[in-house]
Structures are given as structure tokens and as C-alpha cells.
Figure 1 (cartoon, rainbow over the protein chains, first blue to last red):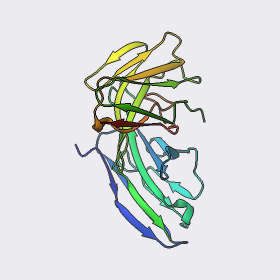
Figure 2 (figure 1 turned 90 degrees about the vertical axis):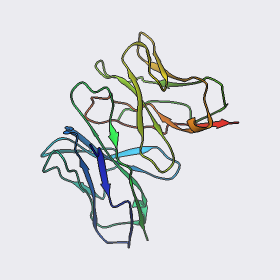
Figure 3 (figure 1 turned 60 degrees about the horizontal axis):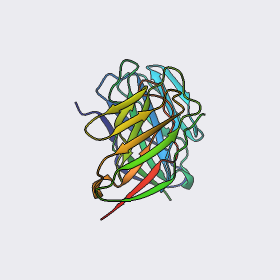
Figure 4 (figure 1 turned 180 degrees about the horizontal axis):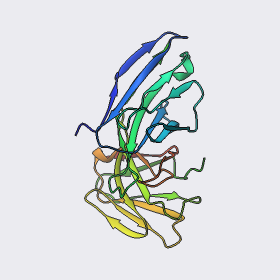
Amino acid sequence: NAGVTQTPKFQVLKTGQSMTLQCAQDMNHEYMSWYRQDPGMGLRLIHYSVGAGITDQGEVPNGYNVSRSTTEDFPLRLLSAAPSQTSVYFCASGTRGDNSEGYTFGSGTRLTVV
Amino acid sequence: LAKTTQPISMDSYEGQEVNITCSHNNIATNDYITWYQQFPSQGPRFIIQGYKTKVTNEVASLFIPADRKSSTLSLPRVSLSDTAVYYCPHGGSSASKIIFGSGTRLSIRP
């Protein structure tokens, strides 16, 4: 199993550009989430999904869109990038069932908006 | 959104036992308590979970009192490689979402 795969690993955007951060998991997990982590800070929840076709807002959803058309994929779209969105973005997945291994995180996407 | 509370930072020395305590004032009845470890430039990694009393694995021990309003992560005989940020997020391992606080930045010195 690859676990949670995030692409790209690094990205530089100009202010106002849009882009999609990709996240895929191969563990058949129902739950998927997106977090952002600013330097020296904890993770903040952007959006999450409890299954295909179902998404909801987290702590800091403004400026981001998500969709969940399949169990495996949960892309995060930046509509019009701003310097305040410079951060490291982590995708995670978890299961509704008996889960002795917690959530699994990807290795992150480091985004810089100039 | 509910969050947990834990110390911002802790320092210790190699070979010591380190205990990090977390407050779970808004924990749900069916939520497990989980702890994660994060190294620089990596995503968080699940290290241990528990519901009540004590749980031990190859990495750490977790102590949870009967009222479940707090938990203590215990790292025995720490080494330099245990330097990391430790989180006790709100929402258990089977929750639809988990909310992270600021975490505890643990620094281990030789």
C-alpha cells in the first residue's frame, strides 16, 4: 500500500492563480481531510469528507474548494491564490471502523504564493 | 470547534522519562484519545491511542484517568531522535474529523 499520496511536493504560484492539490489514498478509508500548517504552528483543518459526495468545512475553509467524487481521491482547489495561503498542506485519511492506527497523513505539499 | 490543551514546549535530556499531559475537556463519550508525533518537514504520525486506564506499545505509554478529561503521554528513556512536536488532537481515531491544537514541542538535549 502506498498510503496517502500528495502531489505536487512543491509549488510556487503567483497571486491570483488557481491550482489543485491532489490527494489519493489506497486504504479504502471513508474519511479524508485537508490541513494547512504555517511555520511553527499546529495543523488547521480546511475541509473534510466522510465519504464520496459528502464534504464539510473545517476551521479555515475560505479560499478553498473540495470535492469527493471517489473514495480514493480528495483534491483541494485554490480558487485565487493569495500570499496568506503560503503554507504546507497535508492530506489525511481515516476509517470509520475499528481503527487501531489512527489517521494516516501524506508527506505534504509546500506551497509558496508570491 | 473544540480543541485540547497541552503545554507549548518541554525540554529534557537523553535517558530521562518525559511525560506530556493533555486536557480533553470536551471529549465525546465514544472518542478514543490519540497522540501523534511530527518531525520537521513530515506529516504527523500516529503513535498511540487509548480509551481508559493505561496503554503501552513499543513507542510510548498512555495514561488516562477514569474521568477521561486528561491524558498523559509517557516516553521512556528519551533520545535525541525523540525531538519532535507531539499532538493530542480532539476527535478519536475513528472520528470523522480531528482537530489539532498547537502541540507540544519537545526538545531533547545530550
